[in-house]
Length: 182
Image (cartoon, rainbow, N blue to C red; front, side, top):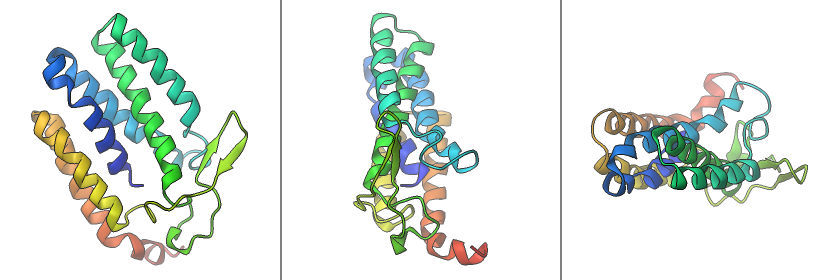
């Protein structure tokens, strides 16, 4: 899935804080957006979907940091809880898509996400055929609505930029490997 989809999903989880704990909502939003993006930094460093994708470890960190945020709510504890929750969902949901290959529509990879404690790769599920597929764009659009409506200012601008990037990426995704000679 596209990083914009992961970020929008995380932000959707943070949106209720606008009404429940408005003083912590921005921290939750920033943590959720960062956590939705962070695992994909391994596109540039290490092995994609292994180096920074930790579905199990992020889930444990989300549970622990969530408990801390509930018992000692602050901007830092809430941001951390939403960071780990969003990173965990990102890492786990990549299993539902294609593998990490450059042309995922060809289905040449049997590696969706690495599960570190089991020391093995999960096979792609292809519920989202590939990053940038029309159904991926639909998910980005759907999950962008709550964050866009709930948050003002910079968070709303980040959502709009994310949607614009997703539209562009989806429009050109299948042409990118040939453009870059790969």
